[in-house]
Length: 289
Image (tube, rainbow, N blue to C red):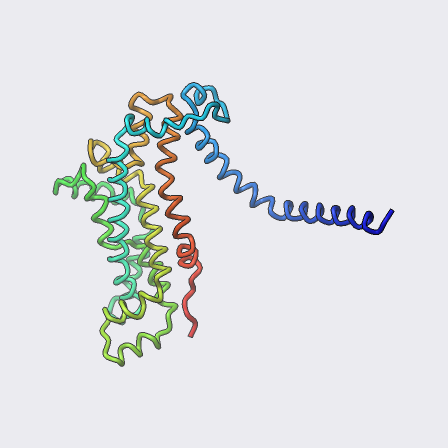
């Protein structure tokens, strides 16, 4: 037996031990990942089944039915509901960013009487469940004729969001005061300091706030159900998916899964495209002076 013949089994044993060590080390993470991926995988496979297959509990499509995605547009007004969802998510995100950035700057960088008390109000607003304010807001929107439209969903974003204000304030506090003081010495006003000094340095944080707001609005079910649940033309996809199961498609699991997959796809694409910015916004700690 040559030396090479002895070394090969040893290398295989070492490689096998290394693989087993890696599996044991990452076993909890793999188990958690499987818990999330398994339902998604079953949903994707069901979306490509025929109605007979989906009703029998089969796990693998045979044959693959790609026409389910075309049937969605005849089973429900998917295009209209998609536009409504994009309007809600897009406009509310723009409003949240535009309204939250100046407030966060005022709480972090400007000195004014009552600033700390106002910040406590912001913190308190984060702790109030949405259901507590639903009744008075519904009465208000009902009196002005907004119920049944997307306006009650979009308008609140332009009045600030407590969580977004808090998050942006914490980012603004990490930027050295010397930068803003130098800008003031050069004669820059507060709006110019915010626009030209702070916003370029905190773009990842602002992008993270925008993504949080967009994801919340896209997946929101409670508010669209409350304000547009009885509307024929103002529903969002989150509400329309539940209506699909009621309107003669209770057992059409393949159509429900296909519609859910189409509802989920834009979010997945957005996350992968903005993943780098999203991670930077979460991990950003500011510039140390």
